[in-house]
Image 1 (cartoon, rainbow, N blue to C red):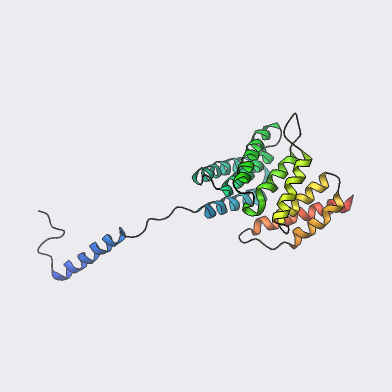
Image 2 (image 1 turned 180 degrees about the vertical axis):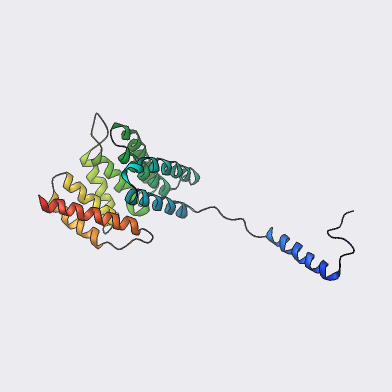
Length: 226
């Protein structure tokens, strides 16, 4: 029968070896490293999206959004039944479509639409109503029938639902202002743009907040120039 160390080993050596063996045995009792939570996974997607959307040259965005969309889909699959990953997969697909442009983007935004609708069925209040907001944006941005599903009336209804959930939200106010400008009510948009500038900073979303405020200032200048 084998022994863990030679019988001729000194007492001091045996004690050191015993300590090592006990330490190694203790490692097996430690809990396994836990996989990322849904919140951590969604935060990673948010931060990656922000860098691509606001810090990446336009010529590089399409491929980067495509790669991020693949990651987002895996997160959605890993947390089946949770609305947050569906919202962010939809946002990333929509952004990929925006970078792609043209009729080639329609397939992506249609996929995003389905994801937002699924998230709303689970919990429309999740992420401060972001699914309503993002779906509303699609409805006023994409062409109407017969090319796509665009519908300004549905867009207003969805954007107002998002505002009702998060009346001081930076995104909800920005996109409703943008909608009002696109539908010929620019003066009504001003109050919402002011709320964008006054919105409280979101933890860990500095890049997105700065980018959205810059977009709000541009939209305000557009209104003033008319």
